[in-house]
Amino acid sequence: MKQNYKMRSAGFLLAAVLLGITVSTPLVHSENIDLDLLKAKFPPGERYFSLGERDPFVPLVSPKKNVIKKIARKSKHPRKKVVSVKSKDLDMPSDMPLLPMKFYEKIQKEDSDIVIQLQIFATLFNDTTKLRKMSNKEYKKKVAEYRSLLTEVLGMRESMLIRTELQADFDKLEFVGTIRKTGISVALIQTQGQKGHTVKVGTLIGPNLGVVKTIDAKKIVILERYRNYLGEVLSQDKKIEFKKQPLQG
Image 1 (cartoon, one colour):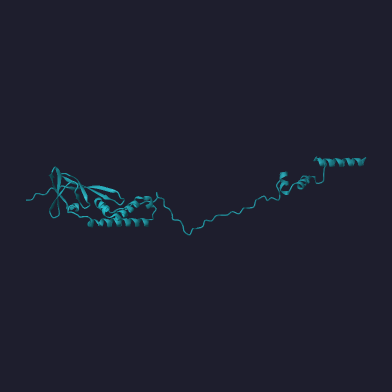
Image 2 (image 1 turned 60 degrees about the horizontal axis):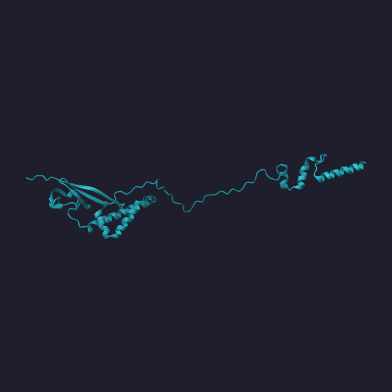
């Protein structure tokens, strides 16, 4: 009968194992049974995950990755420092020669090469953005070149124009009176050498070829016009005041 009981117990255990039924019978090393079963069924990378435990073969601290530091290499040809247009002060040239407009108009008719050179420089000096990008040395060089050209052109005035005695400095012209001819006021001008000349509206007079604008008993008003280094036309009025002649005797 004992033999039959042992056979039944063995059969029951076999059936329980086949059906996946957990047996509560105490076994030797029961605290490691779960891990032993997992080792049999799962590879090393998965068995500890199933138990909710850390894999002892995985290091706690991950290996450091190689960090590549970029080292800026110094260029053999360093870039020029760009100066902000707004931050760089620009000293516009002063004392640039002025060309009398009547003289400049004559140049336009007779020497187109000089006119082109003047226009190129005028365009450059109107472009303040381009001027600010220049170095101080380069800028000063351009100013000197332009001033030299204007001085040279102004020096051609003597050979290109036929001057009259009225186209002298104002301190050499004396307004001595007026007369009327056919209803028009005419001024009497005395030049050096006690020579008398008549002047009417539109006459060229003075060293800069100004044009007589108005005449009255007290003064002669002369309009002078110039071309400046920017290509702009400037104008100003000059006056010759009447000087009363002292009584002789």
